[in-house]
Image (cartoon, rainbow, N blue to C red):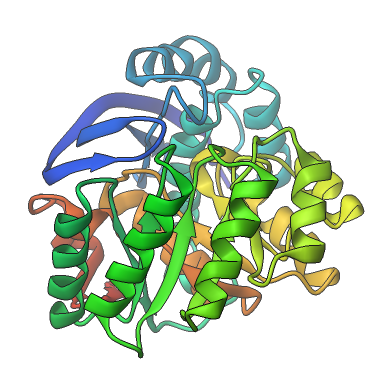
Length: 354
C-alpha cells in the first residue's frame, strides 16, 4: 500500500462583508477576513479550513497569518504521513509559537480531510451525533435606543439569547442600557454580557447587584477584568450574583489550568481561533468538564468553514452549555454557506457530507 502523504498546502484569502459594523470595547469590524487553507492529500482528498486573526485578541492579522502558513507551517507538513495523526498534530503545534488562527486554519483543513478519508461527518468523527446548534446573537456597542431596537428585532427573528457588548461608559449608563434591552427583549430572553476586559471589580459588582435587584435574566458576565487579573476574576466568581465567564484569560490548556486552579471562572469561553484548532479546544473542554465547569463555544467574526467546525465540536461535547456562533448571521450571504450549513432563525443545521 502506498503511503498517504500531504502533497500540498494551498493558501488564499476569504472576505465576506458584514451587514453592519461589529463594535466592541476593543475594535470595530466591517467584514469577515480569513486565511483559507486547502490541504491536498496524495489520494486526491482536499480538506478546507479557515482562520480569522484578530490583532486585539490573538495578536496577529491576515498578512501575518498568511505568511506563517506559507513560510512556517507548509514546509513542515508537506510530505508528512497523513496517517500518523497525533504526530501530524504535534508537527503543526510545534511549527511556530503562538499564531493560533493560522494553526486553526490548517488544523481544521486536516480534520476536514480526515473526515472525508473515513467517509463521515466531522460531528461523527469527533464522537457526536448529527443535529443542529442554537446560537445567541451579539449586539454591538452603540446608542442605547439603537441597541434596544436591535434586541427587539432579533427576538422577532427568533433569537432566544442575546449577548450584549459593553465598554467603558459610566457604570450607571451601562446599567441603564441593559435594563432597556431587557425590557425591549421581554422576560423570556436570556442576556449574556461581555465587557472585554474593560471593567473593575467595583463596577462589575455595582452593575450586577442593580441588575439582580431588577430581576434580569442574565446567564453570565464575560471577562469583565483584564485577562491577567485571575485573582480579581476569582473574587468575582466567589461574590458576584451572576456567573463569571473567562474568555481572553483562556487561550491554551495551560491558561485553563490556571483558571481552574484559582477558581477564576464559573464558565470558560473556548474559541478555535484562540486555541489553534479542535485538538487544544478538546483538551480545554475535557479539563473543564472534569472540574464541573461548563463551557461556551464562541467565535471571532468567522466564515462558515470554521463556524461549521465549531458547531460539530458543540454537538460532540455535552459540557458545552452555550454557543456564540453568530457571525454567519451578521454577514452578507457567505458564498460557501450552502456547502456547510442551513441557517434558520437562531439555528445552525450542518450539512454533513458522509
